[in-house]
Image (cartoon, rainbow, N blue to C red; front, top):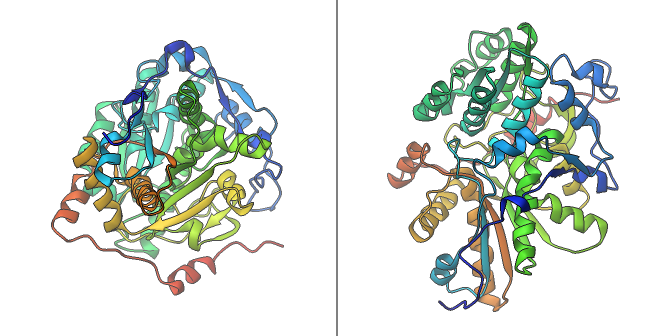
Length: 458
């Protein structure tokens, strides 16, 4: 090995070193994320307006801008122990292959049946639903990772689970769908004719392959039309980033254990759950003036909300029935090209991350689909893990940064999030190998058309 060190291949924390509290980065933000607005009145939403849609405790977490630490209930910590702490891996083989002086680490979140980081928030949201005495929950899912995680969590607590899955993913990933059904969830391709908003979307866009925005609309309608149900979300919301902070807290604890200070932390960005969770404690240090890092969001060029979107209030869903959130957005009517069927298909970005990006505390870049899969294949062949397409966005950027280090001779330390495995994404890999994968990038006119429909704010 060219990089000789005493750092092990995998750094594990002991059970007693696992986080006992989630970290709420909003408490340290000078500029707080803008509040959710009632779409009818344009006034900030109050807790009592959100509780008919969301669980009561989750509403409290969503609105909490003050408490830096929120205790993780013991039942959730006990569940976490089944697959946490997750390993922080030194990518020695990748470093050797690239002949880079950079030191590369990745936090691997794919070591559970759901195959991704999504279980960290799914079990928390199911716990609070059960605690409230609900019958079940509804949700949407893109690539299927969130739906899989939530079906597992609901099964654990004996809750019913209704999943609306983006149609293109429903068709391309039948095995992901069947895992959800194995855990007892019902799975409906979205948009569907089972909801009023779904029928309206199909009428306006016949033959559409769907989007997360469409699926959100259907899931919210289903929750409000079924007594004893609430809606839960796997990304974007403040509360989800809070739960996912367990990723960053473990990562930082593992690095601190060996005295390692990263120069940059890289994460894929769709709605923001993985990235927000991974960078949370590092961003906290940056906000408090205790340390500095480059924090990099990587998104698909086919759905570039950070890099080509507008920072504005927008609907969180295509059906325009959800609250308004101030975020970087491509417009709620934007539907990404069907060739990109990963989970990074949301039209907007987390309000927390959007504020941090607007304040210049976070970088963003977009990458083409074929470049992403080239990086995924390289990583699989060298490090032995088949990555999810979402994760491969971060891998692509990490490899690019490592190559820059080779050119400059700088020994930078790079940390990225490997959010999950890609074993249910083989249709996408097949298209890449058969040279049928396209690098569709929306035109300025397409984005402008969608942005023109942003709600008018007075």
